[in-house]
Image (cartoon, rainbow, N blue to C red):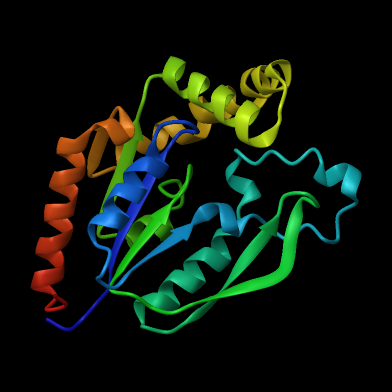
Length: 211
């Protein structure tokens, strides 16, 4: 079998712990050829849209993402070609002029709330994970994060959660669970599931004659 990168998709709602799971897998393979491709970098360029309109952007909706570009760049990485990863400017609510050069790696983790929503992305993944965490835990984690790290008020976080985050999760994110090969309950606290994932990735890498 020829050498081919292993692609792992990791999805889950905001505050589910998917970033913790991603970090644990990434750190397990540190020292090997591994990279992270975050869907958050692939929000659509809105430079032609007035700022007032950009401020209304629903970042939890599938249409907020430029999946065409993400698929194209993931396909390039699978051919062991480097890519120019976009950078998103959250202060201006559009894509920055900055880019990040990413060199191809043997393990590619594609992480984001809706990475399992697009069938084109799913078809490029060897393993699909969905991090499944109870809604009450997710809202608590989001509250703590947004207040502490982003200077948000309690009221604004709760309002956004009720008006946008929760309905988008129920309509678009939660249904993608059915596409997952593995569902990881309780996120980063599930060390057994993470260990099993790392073992499976190692097996695929050995089959591909990479390690």
